Image (cartoon, rainbow, N blue to C red; front, side):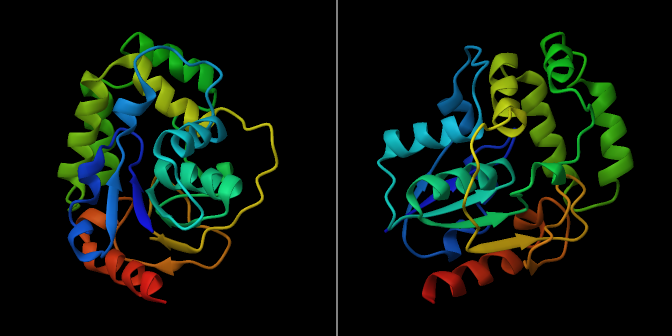
Length: 220
């Protein structure tokens, strides 16, 4: 059994640094920035990306996928294909739970290509309104800066994984959901979940609250 860690939008594998040392097992850390590439992939969706990861890393039913945010959404689709166990952290199975700043995805991609979406003005507004005086502020600023400076087609590819519709009914359920009711990015699930303090970045600000239920789950 291997443990695959899939980060969220704009993140890299370091998002798991505060919980990884406490979770036993062989770990495979994925990086969406590397895997999704810098060329436009207009037809990309979460199911297609899940199939890419399964093939590239030979993911099997015996493996466990741990995904944060976007990573949990991809894990959901991996489970649909091979029925492995998955753990979602601040993630979703219903795309209506994703808080959108711009309702039209194509318009969002257009804004990103022109540098009008991830810029200092937007960063300062979001930081002030949603992360002011919160322990997750530093992490938010780091991720936003990476999105601002990163390859725009890669950023859009990551968003396509989130927003492009999957034309297949997904039959799967997470084996463990970890979520904060104060998450300002992903609304909390309608289904049962393990509640934690903090916001969307609880695995960074309250790591013990996140890794303990994961360890208990893996031991079970």
